[in-house]
Length: 79
Image 1: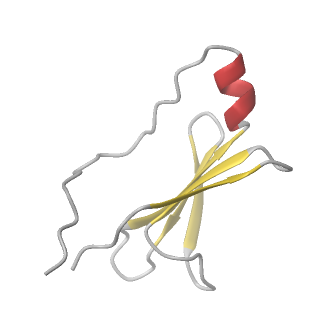
Image 2: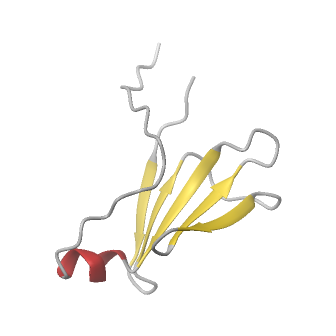
Image 3: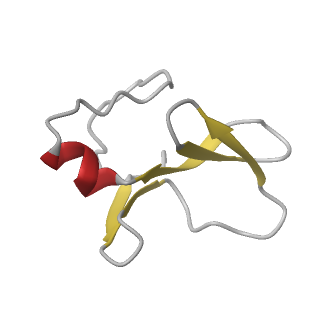
């Protein structure tokens, strides 16, 4: 079964977290464009976590938040 997305917001750091799993030791980390951090599975190079820095500040400024990743979204149907 595919992982469901978990979305959390850190008010203190103003960071939106979009996770397929909890971050773990050994993940590769890379800062993408416009202060978006991606965490990758070290074996598959699949994006497992995204952190959008200054999330509320961007929304208040009327900015669109565009993620530089491919999205293949579909409903998670449990059997």
